[in-house]
Image 1: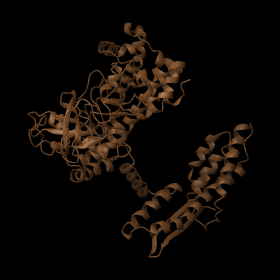
Image 2 (image 1 turned 30 degrees about the vertical axis):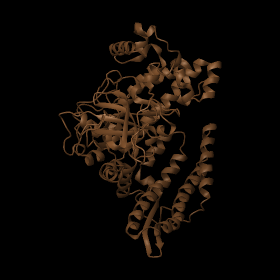
Image 3 (image 1 turned 60 degrees about the horizontal axis):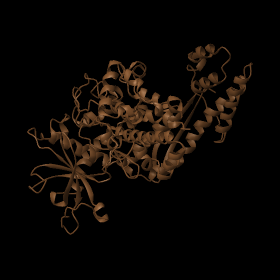
Image 4 (image 1 turned 180 degrees about the horizontal axis):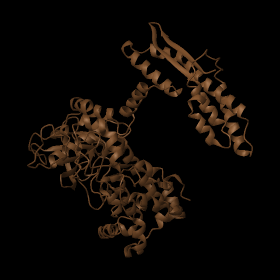
Length: 563
């Protein structure tokens, strides 16, 4: 037997959908058999495997052999596995004939399964609209060819293109749909707000690009709320957060988002944040990890705090407590003040009596796990925050962790708010490279081209590692009390830079480190310390060297129980 060829045509009520031909060659069978039955000197086998005369490549095909039943796959696999196990447990070589027979049977069985599946696939394809049946048929052919080790160059390229467009991260197809389809649709079908829909209450904070207020959505009868000290339960259900972006001379350039450039003022920064928050709100897997975004509007009158022409962004009010508030002691002693929220009231109280140090360690672990999960989801869309810090991390009443303030963020899947030479950052938490991509990286093209190149650019520059460095600094602040104050953080950053961003070296050589308490990081055999050392460090020459958010979640600090 040198080769076998099977030809299967899928039939539908309208006729054949597609025609698939697959070939089982002696090349594949002899290769598998030779490797399975390798003698003690395997070099001889590998030398023969690539010998054309040994593989029978010079001989033509003959009649097809009989194909065993589907159940023979398990039997053949068991024989091969048992034979391999026997080879490992005994000094003598296994019986080559039995292994050869099992491997040959396994190869034939795979081809048999592929042939048996075609009738079922035919029925499914026949239910599809006729214009796309040919496309689906082609894809099925490609998949089956790959699964049965009979791929073609054209089929491989098609499957790679499908994978690249749909499943590579960040997905080019998702990015393009978000920008060119969902964004215009959301503008047409989304909620339409105006200044008459809200009553401004207290100011919550200030920034370089705007002010943040607490507000209430106007009642359905249109009557504005009177400003009172306490809110009724009904009013609490209507609470919102409003962010007013500052007006500046720069203004907003025409088609700024579509130009593939960085915001150059407060007004354009507001446009960026509106787009990014709208985009994340449209993705169910990302939305729960960000503050719930409701929309934006431009004020059309002078009314109270509203200024004609000013842009306002609106979120649902979920909490006014940030991790920065907790670290600053505004919620009580840290980290125990967060125990009831992130661990639950009962567990927190029980640990407070039995092992308060373990409670504190579990609080920090829970917050960091949720932060890394939020970052992982955000990065899956190609969005880099660039300003991860305690003040931009909400702690909700349900114990959730949400990321806020995307004014400095950029979307690497479309090039929005990206410039390889510049970036918005907070030097207290910024990575030492200060920009998210190598400075030699080209500026962003139009969003469509940026989307197509996004997976390649992401793997080349790993911009997400900029955020994980900041997360590592946040974890250090939570775990080491001496690093929570501004003075302590300033001294730490200076000393770390002098140690070339080597945490281990800083801990051993710095005078400041000798006064620090690392108890919460040294638990679990130093798992927490090892994690921050893998986050707070410089990138290497390949733009790697730091853990990603997904890599951090797989670290033993999270996977091993805290005993």
